[in-house]
Image 1 (tube, rainbow, N blue to C red):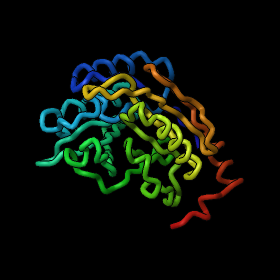
Image 2 (cartoon, rainbow, N blue to C red):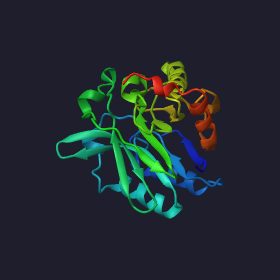
Image 3 (cartoon, rainbow, N blue to C red):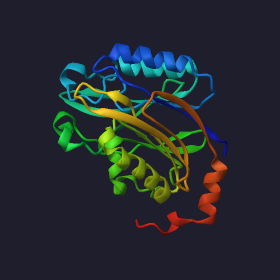
Length: 255
């Protein structure tokens, strides 16, 4: 199986300003010097973690979805990012996955954080998503999902090879983010990529980033704190195969 190149874009987000954020990310993507297969942007990358869905949410024919599809097609790579989406009379916190051929897949956040009022502003998702890219099986999740290992359990056969976490994870709980990303890689014997934001949002919450790439043994391959960053990581399928062959822990997992 070929290696997979994944580009993380950690950035400050303009509060509730869709056009400003799209312009900023477009520049970062156009300035990419590295060849890549997959570009990953944060949760709600066009607005920040806002509960103002009635004013800001778009439908699946809206500006953000169109931009993701156009960017994937124009750059010839898969692009992932999160947005608030309106469906009839409800709203969802949705991860959108755009492929160069125009295909669009999505995952709606399963775990909504009550202390932030997310569970009152949005409807939860019920279905996982697994995407195949260059032979890799990739399972994407959103932010608060990271805390719930039962939902993330790698029980599929064949198992997923990479889990993605897009987030707006506050600095106050940065230690949890760093620790849980490592735990999910080790317990699920997969690569983990976490993409968080930096800066301060419209509610006064601070974000330190700590976007990371972790291998199936729990080795930290990349992490960046307190500043915008664009990083391309090469994930080795040989490392993944060797890990699972020499210590096949997933064979003994609870079902």
